[in-house]
Length: 72
Image 1 (cartoon, rainbow, N blue to C red):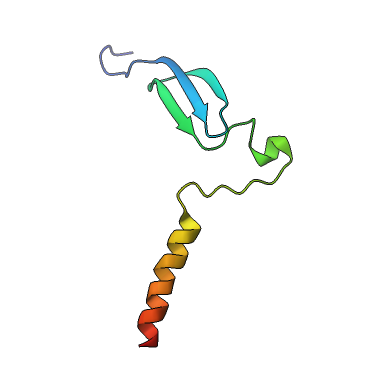
Image 2: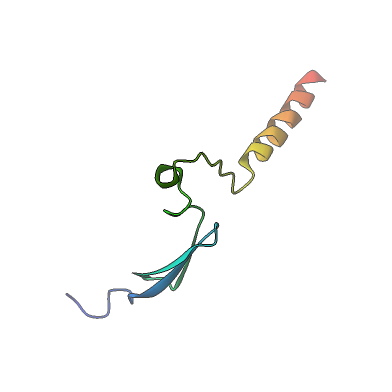
């Protein structure tokens, strides 16, 4: 391998939105995730709706404006 072209590979702390943390290795030191194996529906068997960025509200707001404009 050529030297000086590869990023440094360090221990990384992964933090999930549910509060679970674990250590892995990556090119970044801190990684934030929305879903991990402790809270993912496949592993827990429970349904969980994830709307991290408010996409439903954004959609409703966007199309409520276009509806009111078309009614004029």
